[in-house]
Figure 1: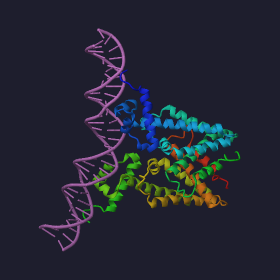
Figure 2: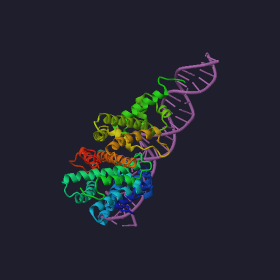
Figure 3: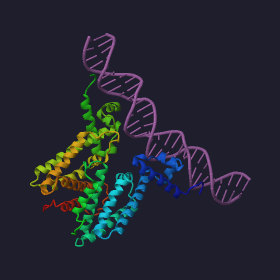
Figure 4: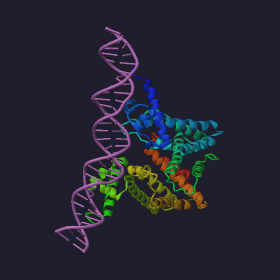
Amino acid sequence: MARGKHTREEIRHLAIDVAEQCIVEHGMQGMNARHIAKEMGYAVGTLYQVFKSMDLLIFEVNVRSLLALEKNLGAAVQDAAHCHAAIEAMVMRYVDYALQETNRWQTLFEHRLPDDVALPEIYQKHRAQLFSLLEEQLKCAYPKKFDKDIALEARALWAGVHGVCTLTLLNKLDDDGLNIKDIVQTLLVRFNTVGGDA
Amino acid sequence: MARGKHTREEIRHLAIDVAEQCIVEHGMQGMNARHIAKEMGYAVGTLYQVFKSMDLLIFEVNVRSLLALEKNLGAAVQDAAHCHAAIEAMVMRYVDYALQETNRWQTLFEHRLPDDVALPEIYQKHRAQLFSLLEEQLKCAYPKKFDKDIALEARALWAGVHGVCTLTLLNKLDDDGLNIKDIVQTLLVRFNTVGGDA
DNA sequence: TTGACAAAATGAACGACGTTCACTTTACCC
DNA sequence: GGGTAAAGTGAACGTCGTTCATTTTGTCAA
């Protein structure tokens, strides 16, 4: 070892911290290598000894966002009295996350790793966990359905909510005077998760 | 006037043609000013006399994509026997468009004009037209509903289908072994547009 | 204490990008 | 034929991600 106010791992965390702040404040294109390095108190070269590319740094921020989302939705399930309420709460928290942490959320879904970089398994694991969180509640809400149908329902509902968020943030829903929460409620009603069962 | 194998308008079209081809073949970041200019047989400067920025050129490609989508979905309605079939056909064509013209579709929804550039009204007009195409059929499918509810249903369904496409193309649906068409069908069933009415 | 070694850190330099603008070329008119 | 203005040019600028030869520094054996 030589030189070292910080260990390698500390520099890694420092970089992600600064990148996270840039993304939260100015969005994905509001961050760049030179700015992050300066803010860290290191030179660009050092940054590149810790992250092979800027894409991988953005990816690490996305992992944090995914974990935060997972924690958030998990808490919603804990607080809910029954599974219908849990589903509604999860959906609403997802919408709130997208609307309040816009830059974080957009980066999470708009950033793509280059084709030649494999998606780390931690990411896939937590994404799967997010789906099983919903599937668990749907299984309770639709007790008669097969697992495969539950998987389909979970993805249909989730994509629906996600689509509302995406298009709202892109201003592409053509929704003058329409409330995003009302649109999501409409979706929830269609999935019988507000009130009755299936 | 001076000089001129092509008029200004012809150069404009030429630029959009080349940009369109680049985007279709290699996606949004597969195009750049120098390449487009060379392909057109002009210098970059000429390109910039016709388009104030590359963003506005991409935007013009998006207008074409939107028009093509509108035409495509419009034809689906024409061919359908009744409104339920029309809705299903529109949805399926939307999915096919996203899956087959991936680069076009992703550019349409991922590209954003800078904040200081106003969204041309032609774009807003055709986007609204796309929604009314769906609303019209939903009005027939749900004859008892108020216009405001129809608007909500249209946006909920549309965002749902859009979300399925988005997440599928981003590989973020965690859908091993699940068919995208099945997910969309699940959504359609929930909206009572396959079979019964509401 | 010193000198040598390797890890750590550096930042100039590269190529690609969007964009600009002083300059050249050309068509048209008197 | 010469003057004029539009059309067209491409070198140059600033910024970006990325690289790597070079310098700095901590460690440890002599």
